[in-house]
Amino acid sequence: MITERPDMGEWLHPALLLMLGALPLAVLQGRQRQVWQLVLPLLVLAAVVALPAGLTIRLELAGLELVPLRVDKLSLAFAYVFALIIFIGNVFALQVNDGAQHVAAAFYAASGLGAVFAGDLITLYVFWEIMMIASVWLIWRRRRQAAYEAGFRYLIIHALGGMLLLAGIIAYWLHTGSLAFEALDGGGPAFYLILVAFLINAAAPPLHAWLPDAYPEATVTGTVFLSAFTTKTAVYVLARGFPGTELLVWLGVFMTLYGVIYAFLVNDIRRLLSYHIISQVGYMVAGVGLGSALAISGTTAHAFTHILYKALLLMGAGAVLQMTGRSRLTELGGLYRTMPVTFLLYMVGGLSISAFPLFSGFVSKTMIIEAAAVEGRGVIFLLMTLAGVGTFMSTTLKLPWYTFMGQDSGLRPPEAPLNMRIAMGIAALLCFVIGIAPGWLYAILPYPVEYQAYTAGHLIKEMQLLLFTGLGFFLLVGVLGGKNKISLDLDWFYRVPGKRALDRLGGGVRRVDAAARQAFMARFQTLEGWATHLRLSGWPLRSWPTGSMALWTAVVLALLLVFGLGR
Image (cartoon, rainbow, N blue to C red; front, side, top):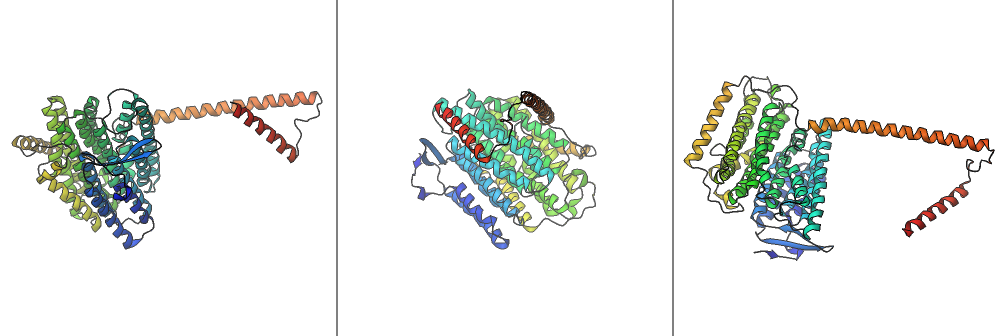
């Protein structure tokens, strides 16, 4: 049942609360800023928890009906985990003395909350654009040339997505007369424009390279926020607007494998984990494409668990970067000696992303794979299972082995600061609690769930895959290490030729400009010679008094105005 409350005094949108509450972070210093960093996310979490399912706020603006707040089980499930990661991310960032970064992170998180509660396409678009603008500052605030360049590329791609989304919204409104954000009818320009815009934020190939390009260049704490909101908001809007779209099934499966393959090729630990974001989001995209109640609930559950364990993994990698100044596998090794807590907490995230029993990924990822089996999609089932093997080998075995174990690099950094370890500990605890008691997570999913993760069949299948994968890794450990090289991605095909095309275009424009200037000067010199030859008085060429110039300027402007109004 939908409840409408036009009285604006009866509610405060969690996104608005977070935006307003973020403003003091720009000026607060020291302990006051740290206290507010912890209090504000808790207030937002309380505001989200207080929202009743079924609440809808409608507004009239310029003849359009807007729904800035639409609360149901799908939006609440994403909002709960968004609010949790805002708190965890702020704990992790307590030691950062950068007001601009904290404000940007808060506005970025608020835009994610605003998007999942948006009941109309205009409200969604507004928060979509805020998300783009706020998030890029988490990249630029690292203050390195590589971060500036990656941030601009990130901005260009997301600006393209925003333009496609706006064009799709306009086309949809003209076609249907509605701006309601519900499941969109298949076919037509509006359908595909909006779908492509959503897929850009989901980091779907070929326009996916913004993610592994930009996230490793972001600040240590900013990457934690980046991993949570852009791609998962995209998963939410896909689940809301495009459930059952067959294209998404195959695209999602391709993403699961593509991300895993590239994770094997890269040397930077944060870039490796960034490619695994693409892979894990692929499971969710495929789940949206399957479209069944089990698949949509599995997608929602996996988005929930992914935000937590991916944040944990990136916090572990960020702690290594913070304490050593290094992030390449070929420059690391042996860190478990002085960073044992970071190592153990990272492993909780690694076991979670690998769907190891008793950890969160096991109770969510297997739900999507099971949905494919129930639908009789054998090939989809096998390919997603295969991607899971690669995830375990690269994220849970390769990265920690060459970072924390393996050959000793001689580095002896101290443990990560206490606030970082506390943040990682909270995320790790949630990963473990969800893994052993998933009932409360299943209870908040959009559809009733009767799925049982801990069956003999699931346990035997997962343990066989993981154990044999582990055996294969240790047999090949000598050849699976990081390689100090650059791995070209699909973006090469439009970045390099695109730059060359722009260079050629610029050269052509300069040549045309030079030729035009030369032709003009030649004609001018001809006219000047003709005037001299006829011994004219020089009236067009002489210097005029200022008053005369003002008079004729006024005359010309008056004529332009008359002709302009006449049209």
